[in-house]
Length: 156
Image (cartoon, rainbow, N blue to C red; front, side, top):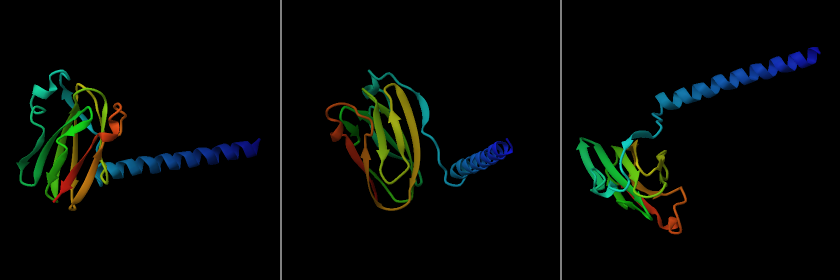
C-alpha cells in the first residue's frame, strides 16, 4: 500500500512541476516574445465584402513611420494582393477575411497563421526584421484549386 501512495505523490508532484513550467513558458512567450493570438476584429457580410471598405481595395498602406497595414482578401483560389512588399523593420498589421469559404493564411518563416472565415475579420501583427521573401500559403483545403492559392511577402 505504501508503494502505491509514494508513486501517487511522485506522479502528482511531477505533474505540478510540469504544469508550472508550461504556464511559465506561456507567460514568457506572451510577454517576452510578443506572441499573440489572431484577434477577431469584427464581422462583415461575405456577399458584399468585395465592395465594402477596406476589402474593396486590398493592398499595403503606410499608416505611420515604420508602420504598415495590409488588407488581405482570401478568395477561391487566390489571395488579394498576391504580392506584399514591406521594408525591413516594418511593423505590419494584417487585416484579413474570406469572401467565400474557409481559407488559411500562413506566412512561412514567421508565426503568422490564421484561419480566414467568411464574415469574420481577422487581425494579425508582425514585425519583419530581416529582408527576404516569405511564401504565403492557404493551409485549409478550399477546393480543387487549393494548390494554386499562394502569394508572397517581400521584405526589402
